Picture 1: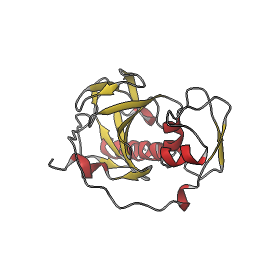
Picture 2: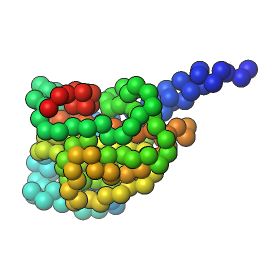
Picture 3: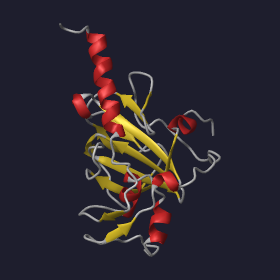
Length: 207
């Protein structure tokens, strides 16, 4: 039986949401550094604060790690969830979207759009990761805004920035690609102290 178009789209979106949520958040005890990993991407993968990860492994202020290095990890379930911080600074929608934001299990939102459209930095910061090494995210960009605040942009077709680059709010950093099931979409996430927080708190805030 052929499903009506609207039902088929809803089903594909549900599958895409599940794909975004499947990011190996299992509280492993250790992790071996792979090529192109950064401390930020490893912390993101395991829902950890990169500063705590650095302290636990006696990593210096440059946060430099080596391929083959074994890092001790703290289980994400053991860490307490901090109170939401006061929203400061200028925050913008990271892309135009054709429908209401769709919450993703485990944190973040999905913004549907068109392949190739602009993906923009939601706030000013420094790019700390670009790559495709995190399963379920495709081409991913992570931006550090403050010592405790990071944002991520996933499923990009083209990445237009590099690690270490300073970006301004609204600057184009990528072009939208396709997530699982070939749906054009941007997955957007914000972490406070390594923990997912509701991005709409920032995007809807009047600063």
